[in-house]
Structures are given as structure tokens and as C-alpha cells.
Amino acid sequence: MKKLATSQLIPGMTVGSDVQSYDNRTVLTKGTVLTDTLITRLELYGILSVYIDDTAKVEAVREEEPAQTLPPAPESELSEDILSKVEQAEEDAGIREDDHTSYFEKVRASREFKEFEDDYRRQKDSLAFTLNEMVEKNIQVDAQLLIEGPLEMIKRAGSRSDIMDMLHLMRGYDDATYTHCMNVALLNYVLAGWMGWDEERQTTALASGLFHDVGKLRIPKEILLKPARLDADEFATVRKHSIFGYELLKRQNVSDSIRNATLMHHERYDGSGYPLHLKGEQIDPYARLTSISDVYDAMTSARVYRGPLCPFRVVEIFEDEGLEKYDPDMILTFLKNVCNTYLQTRCRLSDGRIGTIIMLHPDRFSRPVVDCDGTIVDLREHKDLSIDALI
View (tube, rainbow, N blue to C red):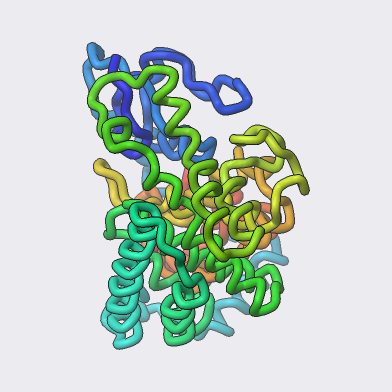
């Protein structure tokens, strides 16, 4: 067997031993052949690494056979209420049959995105330099100065929906610690705003994201890069990155909220997290917020075998398996607003059809109503279909 980080897994690999969560629940059993969805669920459960059977042949696997192109859904399959809302949504959005220009092509070509991309690179490099100086030289960090750059970037980007659009287009970047911390900081700021937090709390949420994984820089490289199987002590060390980060921040002039977010961002609302196995409101609110941004960023990042995962697919995984693990108000607010961000956006369905997302269901955000050039497809009624990509 060999031990691989979750980010190194690819579909077709065979699990070499049972995979357990931090509350000792079996997540996957020995012999399971990994799929894209299973790998993503490991990230949802906070699994850092998995033992793989390196004697088993790795074969290409599919989640399922591609769905056949469906005939137009008869209007009788859709309620009058949904049909009327669909018509109103199309009218409000000014949807035209010949308007098929990719929204994200327009965003990528815009001056605002190019400025955001340049700002992002500069701020990520500045964050990397600052965190390394803090860890390696024990310098005092001016947290207020550190967040000024990202705050200016946010102001120039525009609305929270604009920030989500631009982050969606930045998914080609590597998922190294600094990039991940920058993404989580921006997501924290967006979610805090959606929660109705005031500007001071939104800024603290931003800072919590910037610092949340700093403890990873304290893990010896010989452990992180070890090609052989980690022993029990080494594996325990990897799990301590949140504690390492907390200890680093105790020597810094930052708030208790930022320290707690670093310590507790792997805790889960149902008590299944680590390192302290806290539950519910025992977990600092900034840590509860950061845990959502942390997992969402991990699941929507590119992997060696695929590009970034579609936000609607990630939302579906949260709905199916993750709601009880997160603060209920925060997770529902996050999922609702993420999906609202992509209303009136073109998408590709799993059967290859192109359509426009025109309406959400409040009881199932991941299964919206899609207009496929005049054919209305309610994904809540078509369980064999899903949104593969936003375009």
C-alpha cells in the first residue's frame, strides 16, 4: 500500500484500507474503487490522506453511463406555478433565443477581471512572504496592514456576485497553502456579508481566512513530502496543523476570533471534527464560517485528473451529506446565495445540452430549472440529469 494526500487521488484507484473520519465513522471501506464524487466527499469529511492498494490496476471509471438525450419535457410534467415563474424569470432577464454568448467569456475578457487577476497575484505573493516571515523569523505581523490589500481588491471587484464570478475563473491556479488561504479569505468576506454581519465582522472574517492554514508551514517537509507510508506519530503531526497555527498566532497581535478560527476550522457542528471535538456553538462563529469556505474552496479547486468542480455539484454534495456538519444558518445562507449568483447563467447539462439557469428551488438549490432553448427542464424532476459546468 501507499499513502496519498486526498488531492493526489484519481478516479480508478482502489482504497487499501478502511477510511475513517475523525469521529471513527467508516467513510469508505477497503477495496472501494474511487470515483470523482467519492474523492470530493473525502474532502467534505476533512480526510487528509488515504491508503491506496498499489497492486490493483487503475482503470478509468465513470460516475454513470452518460444520460441519453431526453425528448422535450411535456408541459404536463411541470406545475402551472413553476411554468408561470419560469416565464416571468425569462421576461425579467430578457432572455432571447439567439443570446448564447458565454457569460464567463465576457467576464474573462473584461477590464475588471484583468485588474482582479493582477491584484490577486500581488496579494497572494505578499501573503506568502508575510506568512513565511512570521513562521521562519518569528516577526510580528501587522494584521491590519495585511488585510488592506485584499480589502482594496474586493472594493475594486464590485459586488459579492462579481467576486464569486472572478474566483470561479481563477480556479486554474494551484491550490498551495497561500492560494487556498487567499480564496478562503475572499469567500469568508462574501459569506459574512450574506449573513448580514457588519463591516468590522466581515473584515475579521477576511483575516481569519488569510491566517487559517498558517500551521501547515510548521509541518516538517520530510513528513509532508515523505514518499513512504507515514507512521502513527507522523500522521498525528499532520493533523496538528490547526494547533500549530493557533500557537503561532498566540504570539501575534490578532484577535481571539482569528486565533480560534485557525484552531477550530476543522471542527464540525455535529461534533465529528478535530482537534478538540467541539460541537455546535462551542465552535467560534468565525471558525464555523471558515470551515464552510475552506471545504468549498477545496472541492471547487482543480485536480490532476479534472478541472474545477462545478459549484452546483458541490452544493449537491453539501445538501446530501454535509448540512448537519455546519452551522445551519450559515450553510443554508451560503448554498442559497452561491446558487443565486449563477441565476441566468448558461450551463451544460450531463446529457450535453446547453441551457440557462432560470429558477431555484428553495428546498433543493442544486436542482434548478433550466431553459434548454425553449425546453424547460426541472432538474428536481429529472434525477438522471445534473449541471456539469457553467459556461
